[in-house]
Image (cartoon, rainbow, N blue to C red):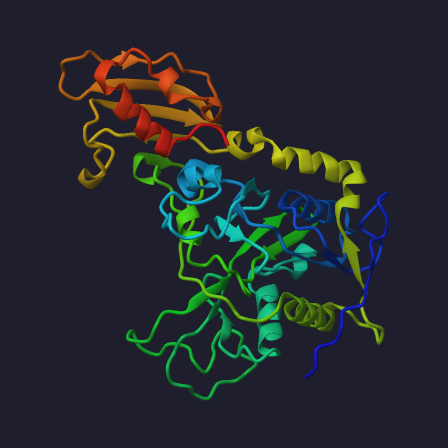
Length: 395
């Protein structure tokens, strides 16, 4: 089956975006994650309740956390702040030099985006929505590109099976492949696409990644591994890590086939469905501009964080994570990014417990832990270094 070119036309103007068509398709030429997520949110809110919408976009390198996640828990903020991970071999050139940290409006876990990943989004009436329906659509698109190992797993992700032996399998079964593992000795499937969802009274959004040719697979875990994790007890949603791989197809081929299979699912017309091209001009739409500015704000990124406790106390952490040389244990409760209380307790009893006057301050607005911890004597330096590594100053 040959790949048909998508019929791409300029967007419907800056005064509006969501047309009255019952089936719509959009492709973004922008790599800005704040803009693409804002356009997506606008389509969710403004497209007609009975319409079906496909939106395809690619972002520059960025870490995208879920609506109910904790950035201090999910992300290596030092690596984000530096642009490259301090854990990398300094003799090698960095793969990524600038990374955006974005909190999206849908739930789910933390993901890494770059130009080798295409994001696909389907917006539809709630009656059309299941967690598998549109992932199955994308699997069919991949299989039409000869990616026969692609399937939807029990977590509604798309994976590539790694079984060594090929068996007969119905190609219409999007949940099994000829290479699905049949015993525990078979290699684990590798994830290529993770999903997130947002449901409203009249609309359902399913959006997901698809790793096609990312050059950053080897460093992604470094950005998604927080040094603060052993010291945080949190509410909210934690990410579930999985081994990942690339599909090794082009962005254009993937976009074309997803468009074709979206048409097969929803478009009842002998004519091709045109894909509207969108980009920076959509910032002239007031609702998109407002959403864009909100997503870029540090308050949105950090102050939406569910309540959590940060502690180095032996009763709260495992022995292997005890901080050597630390003269004080620190305990801090944080809600919506604001410090509710914070206290230091001497480990050897030689110094009385100290209260720090940081209550009511936004954690991400602490510019210097050294200044905040003045007056703690010889233990200042060790505690300061530890906090700068685990709870770094604002990005």
